[in-house]
Length: 618
Image (cartoon, rainbow, N blue to C red; front, top):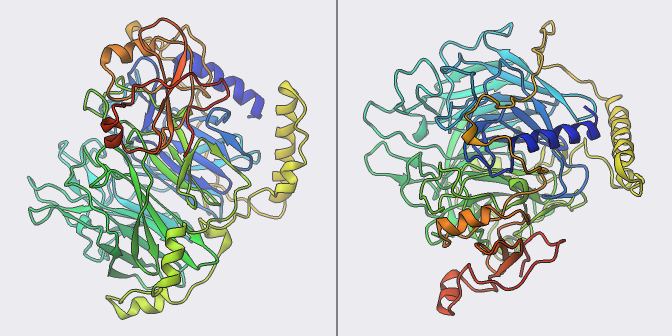
C-alpha cells in the first residue's frame, strides 16, 4: 500500500475508533530496518480494550518523533486470531517473521469472532518490496501443508530469543486460555526446550532443558515458576550464546529471584551453563504472573570495547514509584545500577533494541493508577505520543525522538570505566565458559549494536528533496524508497514463508472491524477526529478521579514522554473549562525531596509552547 494511501487509511481508522488510550500485551520485533508491532490489546476513548488485528510497520530508515510518526497498518486475515503476549522471531536470512504462542484475553472485546481457544498454529509474516505492506501465512496448523506438532501446546511468558537459524523457547505456561488441551484456567509450566528451525520450519520439544527451574512441570495446586528473559548474544561462541536473566522459581515453596545467576545455552554444543553475577545485583519483590513487574530485556554490542550489555527495565526494590534500568555487562557478568527513573511505571510493554544505540519502548499499562488494577484501561491515558518512547542506551536517557543517523552503540560511561579499572572476566563457575567468552567475533548484520545490511545510507536519505509539500512529498518519498529497495533486492533473493513447499493460497486480508455492533455506550465512534500522532494527557496518580475525568474532557492535546527525575510532565489544568496545557516541573529532585519542599506533581509551572512535546531532560 503506498505510504500516502496508508496514511489516509490510518487516519480514518483512528477517527472511527476514537482517541488512543493504551496498548499492551503486544509483541514487537526488529526486522531488518523496520520495527513490527503485532497483536495484543488496544484501547481507545471508550475504555474497553480490543484485540489488535493489525500489524504495524514502523520505518527506521528515517528520523521521527512520537508525534510525527505515521506507522503503517497491515490488517490481518480473518482466520488469524490475535493473541496477547505472543512472541515474534525474525529470520534475517529470509527476511520473514514468525509468530508463536499467545493467550486469549479475558479483557478483549472482538464482536462476533473467535469463540473458544483456537487450535495450535504458527504464522509467518512477509513484507512486500516497498516495506509498506505484507501478508500473514500459516506455516504450521490446520490451514498449512504441515501440521502443528501434537506434543506441543501454545505457551505464554516463556524465555525466548532467535539467532542464526533457530529460535528457542523455554519455561512457558499453559492454561485453557492458551490451548484447548488444558481443562481449566490454572497455569501449568511447560517442560522441555522448544526449538524452531528456520531452515526446515520444524518445531520440536527437547528434554535438553538444562534443568532450568521454569521448565519443570508444576503439580496441581503448586504455584508455577516464572521464566526470566532470554537474549541472543552473537559476540561469544561459534554460533553465539543465549543468556537468560531474572525470573522467579517457586518449586520449593519459597520464591527465589534469579538475578544473581545467569543461565547460558550454547547452541553449537547443546550445553547449558550457570554463571554467578556480581556488582549491583538487582532485586525484585516476590511476584505472581498478575503483578509481574519486569517485562523488558534488550541487548546491544559495543564493537570497540568488545562487550555485550543486557539491559532490563521495570520495577526493582528501592524504586517503588518509578521504573529503572539495570545493565548486565558481558563478559564480566557484572551488574550496573543506573540513574534512570521513568514515570509512570509500565507493565506489558515491549522494548526493542534497534541497529544503533537506541531502544524503542511501546505501550504498557500503568500499575500505579488510582484504581490499583492495571487491567482497568479507563484509569489512565498513556502520556507518550502513540505510546512510544525512545531510549538512548549510551546516554541512558529517554526521549520522544528516534534518530536514524544515531551512531553505533557504545557502552555507558559507568560500564567503560569498570573495564578500564577491573578484570575483564569473572571467576568462571565452569571452565568451559572461559573458552566461549574469551574468544569473540563481530557479525555486523546479526549484532543488535551493529549496523544492518538493509539500512539505507545517510547519503541516500539526504538525497530526497524535502521541500515538496502535501501529498506530492509523500509520493516522491515513497517512489524513492521503493526504488532503493528494488536496487538492494536485485542482488538478494527473497524466500516465501513456505520453505520448500508449493506456495499456499493466501488468505485474503480484511479491513479492521468497525465495531458498529458494539453497544452504543462504548462510544467507539467518536465525534472528535483524531490522528494517531496524538495522545491524551497524563494526569498524575495523585489527582482524583474527578480531576481525571475533567481533564479527559479537554480537547487540547500535548504528546510527551514521562520524564526521568529532572524533567517535565505535561498535563491539562482540570476543572476550568479552558483548554490550556501546563507542565509540572520536577527539577532535579526526587519525589521525596519534592514533597519535603512542599511540591507535588500537581503544581503548575506555566504553559507549554505548541511545539513542545511536554518533556525536557535535565
